[in-house]
Image (cartoon, rainbow, N blue to C red; front, side, top):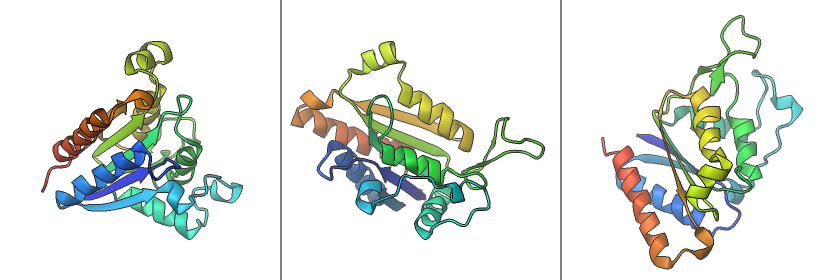
Length: 198
């Protein structure tokens, strides 16, 4: 199976990086072909320029590569922290530039963009891992868990017909080494359960 793992965190020693590394290691150990993008390490440019907006725009080679990797993925794993109820800017820019019309979704004939688009991505499973310093119960009760809504309904819900999973690990700032190891073990278990060996 061809799988895509995308990480957005500026610190290569972060727990987010550890999550992504465990996911990649687990998936490759299961025999899958894994494409891994560390957006910060790659210096991904988050700015969507006006010349890229149209569906038939000529894309820079790096963006074309990301679009192709997203299109070809049979499963997707996203890793990023919860910053102000949102992904980091580089992840938002990746969404803006890579989840493109004609590649991730399209509007049906006669629809000028006001309707519900047709999903084009082939992925059948998507997993989003987030870290945060707000207890998960408070995240749900006070803030309505905006990252769940964003990824499940506003992105994957419009671009793919897939099984969606998400985990929020926290509270990161007071977590112990043992807790983090248990969370990484959970990531490995998730990968084995959601992307079994073919």
